Length: 133
Image (cartoon, rainbow, N blue to C red; front, side, top):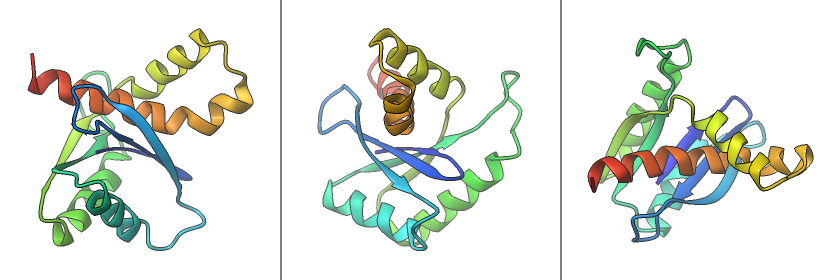
């Protein structure tokens, strides 16, 4: 499972036992107070071995300000999740997702609905590609 963190939304992607990443859903952060619990429940329901938390780095590899938020989420998840929780480089995931959706000629309104979960799928696919070169 991969998470693309945003201030308002968290994109979620799964690989469903394959070597391919698939967009899964979006968690609306503003409307939920128990985001960590929701992520943990989803991970358990989907029988997830590894939770990837998108780690926002700058192009030179240094941490962006948002990286601390990702690190905090990782620590919270690790407190209750028996599986592995990993920070994973998310550089260019949103721009890659945007490019893919534009190639599909998707309207701006429809792109906004799915961009976060497609970005999470880009993060997960990067991880999967590194695990199975």
